[in-house]
Length: 430
Image (cartoon, rainbow, N blue to C red; front, side):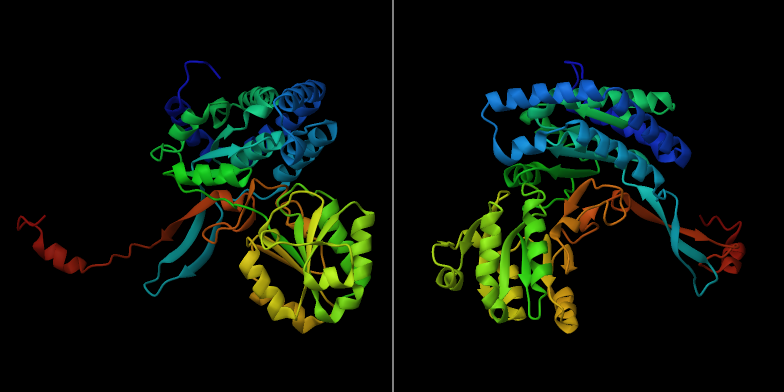
């Protein structure tokens, strides 16, 4: 990015690029994704080295914990991105698809055609893979995108931006369709006010970043603030299934937003508490327990009121005994974030009640919270997760980056009385 570039110039170039990208054939868009995948493989060693440099600089500046973990872009992550690009290329192109076709009472055929949103701005921390997936989803859905990653990933993101430019140019599409920028906070604030050029903002990062973006933006924002996710071990739960799900929902990737933070154990399963707490301890998970847990398993650290609403992003679980399904749902409603919640039970009616009544973006029965995932849901990957209820909810893929326009086919139908118009011809009526 040239030093003389301004947020408005970047956004204007993105807006201009939408004309070509929105009209691009599916085969051309897929070819860009294929070329980007090949470039990732060709430059894998350079990307890993750039990421190593970023991580060393981040550590020197005191970055630790979840943010440092999200910054990792090693060979496995590069290969995962290559796989995601292939999956996204294989998905149906939403642009131009027509649905809900119906014949109206006056003989018209009406439907809804999928169209790109236009220009998308993503603001995110760490996560170099977002630079790949964000560009891929925007390209396949016919949008232009501006990607502003955090300063902690500057070297790796800069290289990925150059690779996107090469992949686009190779297929005759404007390189400005995917722009990776490293603007400071003031310039990002300016981007967030360019509602005449940018159509949607997607922030990804900690609660502080998302609140700052939402507060400053005059552009619609799709976001989630936190992931306080629950596993409810309900009546008639299979204890082995429950243990596997509780462990997987925390241990697989404790620093992601769909990692579970609280285990709610039905009072009928209270006898299982010592086994659960022991298994968590054996796997390095700290337990912060409610009163019943502390009573049944002496030595357990008591949970505070703050714990129930905390997104730990770490090897910590809050564990509480609840008196039935209604109490579990009440707890989730009070302390949860509407992200991802699970019930473990062999009771079909309880499972159905849970699915109907839990108001979260992703609700599961007898499965880990880790399955709140774009690839699992057939999206190839995901560009973000929304806990909003308008337009997009849960993991977001290609469909969520499009809108629609109404299209109508007629056979000469008119609304008014054409005979009256013909009588008025020559009378000076306009």
